[in-house]
Length: 290
Image (cartoon, rainbow, N blue to C red):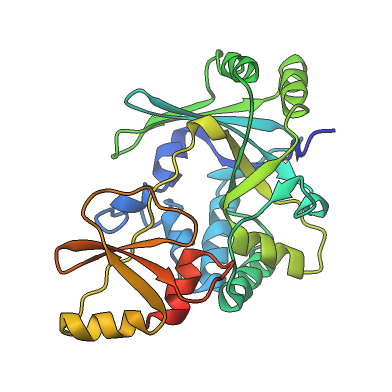
């Protein structure tokens, strides 16, 4: 049985797709969306009540409309020669954390509370949870064949990415997608842990919308934090020495579990917690270096 199921999505009319779609996060500061249409106004609104009203207006004016029937949706992103092939569907939360749908990130109660409030007021999931999965080369070829037809939506964004979306209504193609998804035994949550936890704690039966990409097409990027300070070098080292051992690096090194790289005063160092911890590096740094 497939972990990902079809659902009746909420999507814009074709003529409004470009105006409704929000930009890549790196363009958000310089981007000036259409105040009436762009989804960024909903995503970035500090007032959940106001954001809900904006969403309702888009529905009332039939700029966005919910499908009557359950469908799978295919989504392709192309940038230069890089391509991501995604399948959009819903998952059953009963499969979460039981070796079928796996999370990896620790969550924070205040963020879960905010997401839960948003979820209960909106009664609509406005962005998908990003997931990945492992497949072999044969399955990858089968996935590529699913994208051979003409897409329902096609647009290019300011970051030179081409976005294409297919609404799968054809029963034969729906069956091909189901057969493909039946081979996926595990799904890994890449982004959306707080939304998942909010749904689990809402005490309502919710089937989250996810987009699933093959692991081979997903890049894991560094997540770096930059701190500006007027503290002298010796004072900084003293703070670090309290909880970490520190070693200067003369050349690039492949990091092992428990090692954290730090760039300080034009030199690279490796720091390791004095006490072993199973927590993520980002959590260790947040707790011990303030």
